[in-house]
Image 1 (tube, rainbow, N blue to C red):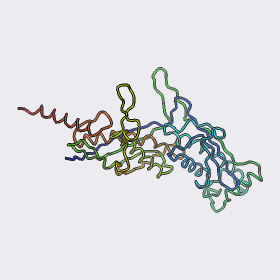
Image 2 (image 1 turned 90 degrees about the horizontal axis):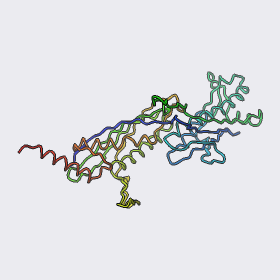
Image 3 (image 1 turned 135 degrees about the vertical axis):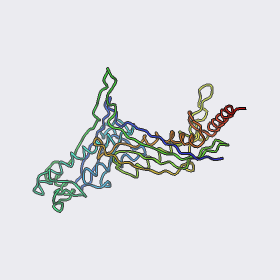
Image 4 (image 1 turned 45 degrees about the horizontal axis):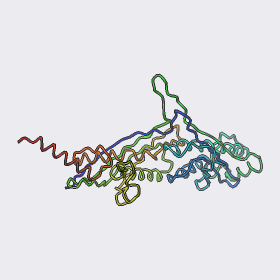
Length: 338
């Protein structure tokens, strides 16, 4: 017989370690035609980080993301980056890109101020134009300003920057400090069916609410959440490395190392909780690895809600769940008076 259960799990996750150096660098240059190039040492591993960095640069410059060309991962030409690790790219590299883009924009403002007859601090960059903040119809195209900066004034709009979360050394006496620049939070709820005759668990739905600061690209955030739930599903129910007595792995290929497929994926309700963080680029924090953390405990809590057994070793395979159910029944029978 199948029993339905729901389980909840919450988590917090640190972003941007501060105990030692954790910098990223960026260079942004605006071309004569109003497009821009961003040089960054980070790499794209499928998470969409280069698209997000392009959006950050575009926002700072008043351009469209399609106007931004990213050159990344080339250590001969790009500035140093600590790495595409620890869910740090949007938060740390994004800050470096934002600051570099703002420095390039400030050069444009100096040139545009002369062209418009105003002071640079009266200007803003928006929709491919540099315009007077209180009088937007008084404007000049960014391409025209950049062309004049290159060829008329002789000050090409180029900005470079590094950003490192403020380092806070640990107090050697108390062991206290601030080990990370910021934190993200999430809650996931899993709904499952558990068959008490076979131990089989089917995850029907996962509702995932994630605080990532400002969602620079909401579609990418939803994709990261979906990917995290997929990995958490594998962690909770399927994936296990097995060894023989000599310590040799016996399931070292995808025929016997079991992973979930698309047919095993539950319905996912992604809930982006925007919580502006003043230390992040335009308020952004992170969502990559944190999307994985609550899934497995939510699923195991749902199993407990369905059939009343706690699974304390993962994955919660049908064999383990059934063994726990049988052990529970045996305990209950022993408590029945003769």
